Length: 332
Ligand code: TXA
Ligand code: MG
Image 1 (cartoon, rainbow, N blue to C red):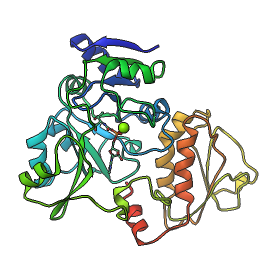
Image 2 (image 1 turned 45 degrees about the vertical axis):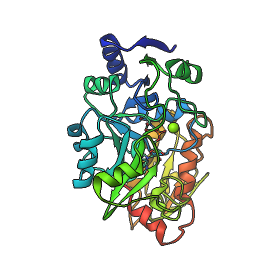
Image 3 (image 1 turned 135 degrees about the horizontal axis):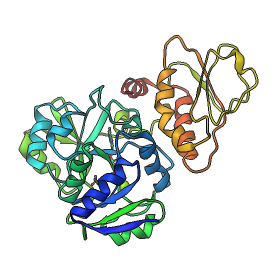
Image 4 (image 1 turned 120 degrees about the horizontal axis):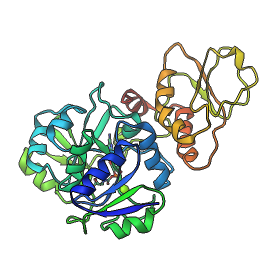
């Protein structure tokens, strides 16, 4: 059952306690309604992808209540600080280097070493303050549909799939945030939005460039061999060869498993949400130069299985070229 509650102090308290419990809450921001989860809770973040029916684990924006909260998870240089001080709270998202110790779950960054951060205005900020932690939130629509700018629009798309919708009326901007990544001597515009490239260039005195599609790092999750561990990955494995490192699911016992060098079960109970939350940690645990072969047992294709299998196919894809290794080294 999805409840709707009008914005106000009760809504802030209820939204925060629902998020604390690991549930999904749709919250109004000045841009569009966001589908929020506690960014530190892997199963809750996995549930976002499940509720949206997203077939890929593309990275999500971490929403914060302040520059201070943002500084706990990412590193600001001078330009990033200038932009945040000028436009936050507001419709600007900054892609910045993640702090290695940041408590944000790897599913939020898609396993990248950067995080997208934004401080929204209004009740969204109050809810984040009440939670005390960053909130991961894509737009609150089923995958492939338009972003919602009213609570009714959210209910129409996601009713029954989320716990709570906070109704704050129509969004004032009505368009997703501008996304930029400050680089050396320039600023990359990753998504156009309400704050224009011209304004950002005037404020910072730096050129604002639209990176071309060959700059692999700009399209996280799009590169085939993204998230590839050092060793060869064999999918749909029904048996284990001696010395294989095995990633499996649902307590399955494979032929020859006793010969595996190490075994990680993504979810012994067969829960795809738990498996999604454990996926990047498993790939990274087996991403070592001394691990030559990783076998992965079949994962169901239903629900979140589609996104899990998409990511595993990228991990198993043949290595491409130099730009691929740039992506590989960007892994958290
Ligand atoms: O206005 C908005 O930004 C809304 C509200 C809810 O805040 N959110 C939103 O989220 O539009 P979403 O998930 O629909 O879009 C997030 C975008 C994606 O295009 C994603 O690829 C990009 O941010 N992104 C996230 N993390 C990134 C990273 N580390 N590097 C590059 N791009 C990133
Ligand atoms: Mg969206």
